[in-house]
Every structure is written in C-alpha cells, then in structure tokens.
Amino acid sequence: ETTPRALTDHYLDRIERLQPSLNALITRTAEAAHAVADGLDEQSPGALAGLPILHKDIFCTKGVKTSCASRMLDNFVAPYDATVVERLAAAGTVMLGKTNMDEFAMGSSNENSFYGPVKNPWNLAHVPGGSSGGSAAAVAAGLAPAATGTDTGGSIRQPAALCGVTGIKPTYGRVSRYGMIAFASSLDQGGCFARSAADCAHVLSAMAGFDPRDSTSVERDVPDYAAALSGDVAGLRIGLPREYFADGLEADSRAVIDAAVKQYEALGAEVVDIDMPHTDLAVSTYYVIAPAEASSNLARFDGVRYGHRCDAPRDLEDLYTRSRGEGFGAEVQRRIMIGAYVLSAGYYDAYYIKAQKTRRLIAQDFQRAFEHVDLIAAPVTQAPAFKLGEKADDPVSMYLNDVYTLPASLAGVPGMSVPAGFAHGLPVGLQLLAPWFEEGRLLNAGHAYQ
Ligand code: GLN
Image (tube, rainbow, N blue to C red):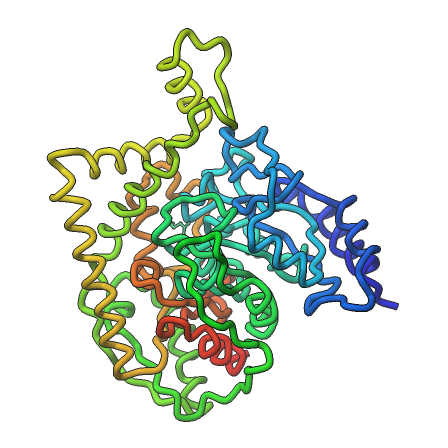
C-alpha cells in the first residue's frame, strides 16, 4: 500500500543514499516530513496531498534554516513561511528539505554555493546548471518528484535543461515573491521543477495567484492548469527566432532542438521563422539591471539585524565591512560592486537608464513576435552541461552562457524547459516561451511533446 508515509520514506531514503555524491540539499527535514505525512487531513487532504517536495533554499521556511546558500545566512532560521511554501503546504505537500543553489541565486553552474557545488546526476564531473541546480538535480535523480525554484535570468529553465527535467518560470507577477529572498526584484519569479509538464501543471496551480503581501503580484485568476491539458497543438503557430539559432549554438544540441521542432510539426503545429532583433542586447542589459537591484536588495545584510556578524567589531564601519566581507562570497561581492557602480552619480544615465531603455526594446521584440505566433521555441543553452570548474574563473563567459534565457526574463514572459534529448551523453532542453500569463499554453505544449 502506498501511504504518504511510505512515499515520504522512499524519497528520504534516496536522499540519504545520493546526497553524498550530488550535494543537492542544504537541509533535510525528515522529522517534520514524517509529522506532516502522518497528519494529513483525510477529510480535506488538499490537491497535492502527500506529494513530497523540496524547496530551494531561497524560500523562507518557518523554523527551518534558510541560507540562500550564503555564509551570510548560515545561521538564519526564518520566522515565517514564504507564500509559495505556505500554499504548497496547504495543498498537502510534504517538505523533505531545502535545496542547494548559487549564493543569493547568482550564477549559472551552482559553483557559487557556500555549501559546495551540486553535481549533475547524469555525469558527476559536470555542473547541474544554476542557480536552482540543487532542485533540478534532485528531481533528475529522483530525490523528490517536484521542487521549487526561482528564475531571475534563467535559473529554472537552464538547470532544468542541463539536468533533463521539466521546469517552468511563470509570468513575472504570477507567483508571489513574499518570503522569497530578493535578488533582482523586477525579474525574480518563483516556479517549479518536475519530471513532466503535467506534474508541473499540478504544482504551479497550487503555487500561483495573487498575494496582497507582494506589491507586484498580479490580481488575476489562476486556471486549473492540469485540467486544461489537452495535449492538442494542432494549428498552433510556433516561431523560431533566427537570433537563437545563430553561430553560438553547438551543432549536436541544435540537432536535438531541430528534431523537437519537427515533432511539433508532426503533431500539427505550424512552424515559422521570426526575428527578435534586440536579442543580442540581453546579456549586457541584464548584467546592469540585475546587479543594480541586487546591490540595493543586499544592503539589508548589515551584520546588525540578522545574519553573519564579524567578531569584536571596533566600530559601526568595521561591523559593516567585515560582516559583509566575510559573509558574502566572491560573485556576490562582484555583483554588489557592479551594481553600486552603475547606479552611482555620473554613470547612472550611461548604464542604468540605458539598460532600462534596451530592456524595453527586448520586451517589444516579444510583443511584436506574439502578434504573429502563439509560442516561441528555442534552445535553452548553447551546449549541454559544462564541466565543473570549466568557467569558474571567467565570470564573463559564465554570463554569456545566459544568452537564450535572459530575454524572456527581461520581458517578464513565461518560459519553460522541456527535456528534448541528449547530446554528448548529456540532456538538452527545448525552451518554450509564451505571451504574458499564457502558462497554460506552455504546459500544454510541453505535455503534447512528452
Ligand atoms: N545566471 C544568471 C545570473 O547569474 C541568472 C540567475 C537567476 O536566474 N537567478 O544572474
């Protein structure tokens, strides 16, 4: 008999066995999981009753360590639940633990974690992607059937692609950011990973929706995504942006994407080439705006109210500088410095204001594209998962790696990665992008393919 308790134990056992090689989790909550699994309300169990789940360690969890993979928050136990955590608990999910990630969600390889890198379950010498690498690796390795993540510039879609699982980043404003530790507030969006689009549909239905505690949360009904899955894509117009299939795309990965697109044609979709002429501005735009917002958001970590505090500070200045210098890793410090620089008097117009303008141009590319097509299909990454350490000392090549995921983040449109095949023995993801608030269309297209 499959009881919630037995299901919980199955996954806890897999975590026990595979965590030492994968490092996908920061915290395990086995005892609390048992209590929840045993105490599920049989009268009104909730839509996801008994579903084991892992939460990215960026989501505040009441009474449970919430570190954001930073030394700064290594000692932090959240006093409240994020809305996402609260809603998924109310739906009956059983939290097994918190997943590893890049520190403060800054990174594309999970190598920026205070707790060490996560390994790709398909090949332990390779990265799982980032920043939600722990969640993606955990779902890929069967440590949980579903996990939450956040995507500011690709952090759900890219690790989903590199680990061969399905991941969805909803429209900006669709999922509450309350209790989700802020990186770049105008871009941050919560979403989820699972083994299929259908599973993601169930989880997203429970996560999404208006929250008065998040001022950018959008007041708009959430459809029952799972009930709406028809698997029918006949007549759907799919656009292939030329800019996403240009030189940088590795040949074997491209072959996988081309085959996936053919599959959609076989299912009755109509495929057309489109232009998104401002795509090449996305990396420079994002790496001005995201650090700018991060430098402001991370100012709260001052060693005074919570988080890491240095020993025996001489005065207030010393308290700030040493606490932050010790608490933040190298990439986080780099982003804070870039952000402070682009926001400073004299550079503000040249960098920050300019980036706001190019962001608008990128969003207009999507607006125009969606006047002609229902969906956009593209690669998620230029190549499959790279080796651990391969880009670790070259931040710019790490940033360039995000070229296919950043435009949708800047525009705020929903995006998904669907496992499409393998190249060089590693998974390749197909990226699907839809107009604002058309998550249902994305999930249905993913479902049709699977
Ligand atoms: N790789 C991007 C960055 O480092 C995106 C991260 C994210 O989406 N959180 O900022």
